[in-house]
Length: 127
Image (cartoon, helix red, strand yellow):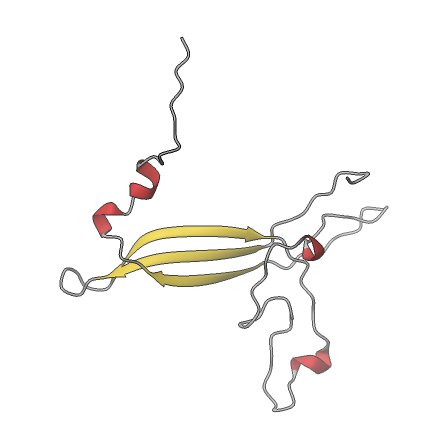
């Protein structure tokens, strides 16, 4: 184990929004679900030279959070909450990503995931 307690900060959020389209029944889309997955990531900034690619296009200034790379919870890349011996400030980069996922869940059943218990749920009564 650790000699001292270690604390980490969740500074990246992965949002998944599920939706349903049914043009015969309604116009547009309806949100049927929402999920948030927190991630702790010590973002790595790329050098100024690396920001401009050889073809002249600008890339994201952080290599840990790009359109091709999605942060994951990995103990080797967690963002530890540490300050120096004199309490120096700590710079924190917050980031997020959003996934839109088509769903077959009917609008009327969107709350079932919260209202219907699983087979493993048991109610214990104490007298």
